[in-house]
Image 1 (cartoon, rainbow, N blue to C red):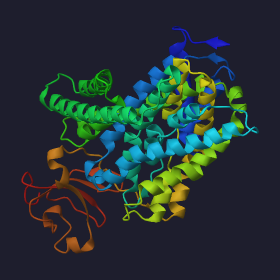
Image 2 (tube, rainbow, N blue to C red):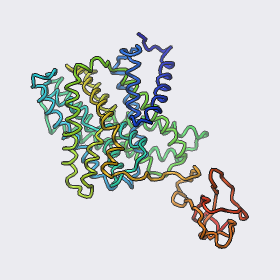
Image 3 (cartoon, rainbow, N blue to C red):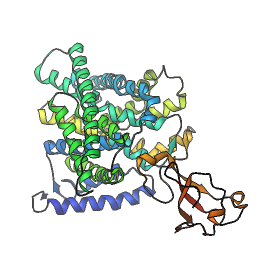
Image 4 (tube, rainbow, N blue to C red):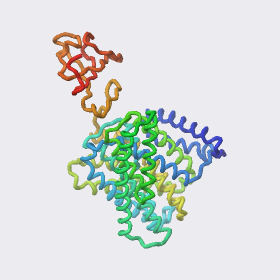
Length: 487
């Protein structure tokens, strides 16, 4: 057995991250979700694998809090307001009513299973609902990661809808989990009115603080004059953690706050945007790896076998009945989204790190049978990542919902300030454009256009008026007041 100590923590941690990255590259070729591989790596190196000892739900919960704050902020930062405007209504309904419906349907099914003598668990109605509540939201880390790594476009605005839902539905699942824990531990009568009031408070304060602190972050970044550009990403990261902790201390929902703050920051004009986006992308991947490795180290695989049958039954029910039923009912008013689109949204009801982290709350609070809840949630997460996560692209193609991924960068890898954003474009030379000659000064280029660079194959050329051009050359141009006529 090998225990984590200050002397070996960095060594083993670095080795685990390195091994996870190498394994994920191999698994990606076979269409295996990378997050699932991180989980398996943690399990392989855990107490029942190579012997690394880690059994602290408290530390796991802390790692989850840090990781999810950054993951949700980064996801919000990458989401464009103009894309989610058209799906705000269905996204919010799925993130609220959809979560409640999933929890109620699944909780009822779990309670029915508990009453059947053929199953190995005996849970009360409240415990059944608590177990369902921990799994009632889709996992933001899994959804964001899979939609980005699969490199597939989706019709009918399904991608922004799924990202909006997964980024904003954790508060509802969190509140349901905490409220049901309180009922179980204190014996208080369950009050729908109190629960509704608490959830409303969490949503209102989370949204308000997220918006305000996001605006403050944008103002600071654009106004402060730091001596080193590398400090701007660090400043942004500090604002992420301030947004989460301050909101949480004032009884709002910190997870919602960081997602809203990310939306505000990502959709504002921002100095040093490229440096911050690169930093946040790398940090997000690191924290996803650390989070799933930590969860894999925490679990004891042998303990899952005793609940595997009931966990499989619950997982199948959630995938094929509870999630589809809640999605179809919630999206009845939205007829512009075709039936196939609703089926796909039902399928992308991924469980991942968030349900497992929520399952640590009963463990820490000392709820009876909390270990059973944790093992069931972990098993269902594995089922969801294998079955749903591994088939997202295949299902999208079968439903004819896939399309080419929209191009988000230019051929030259050049960053242009936000003020020039729409004015930057590429122009591919055709034979018709060279009727007056093949020199750049002879090209039929629109007035007010400045040619910055020319790409021929893999070669970048510096343009001038006497540069001979060829059909198929790609010109990087700026059109606007800053441009000149010709070159």
